[in-house]
Image 1 (tube, rainbow, N blue to C red):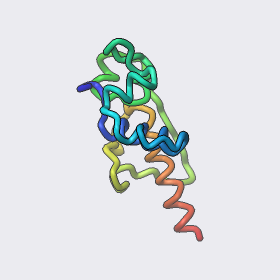
Image 2: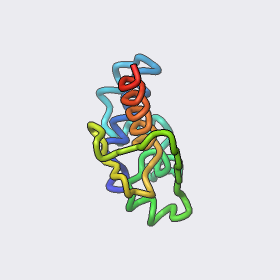
Image 3: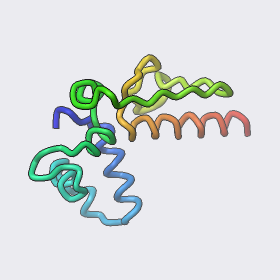
Image 4: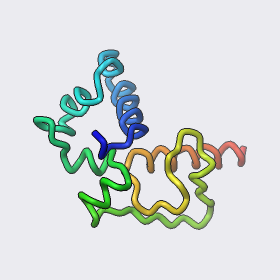
Length: 115
């Protein structure tokens, strides 16, 4: 569990709950959540778990080839300013769910400033 980002686990839990409307998901332990979603099998994390939920350090150790590079020129993405974001502007290796959440927040902020 030390290889996983707690923010990413919470984001995964909330998205799964929203999709299924199953209140039991909110009550599960993190380990049970991972097992039920097949992100952990017999207590071992899957590659999918690391890609979706892994910490920067875990990605570097277990998946050094895993990196998303994004270049978007019409809007500055400033992750440091986002609420609940553990992504810093100079991070080059971040698991998928926190990255997607940060981009979604930036898009909403941009839309609100243009309204």
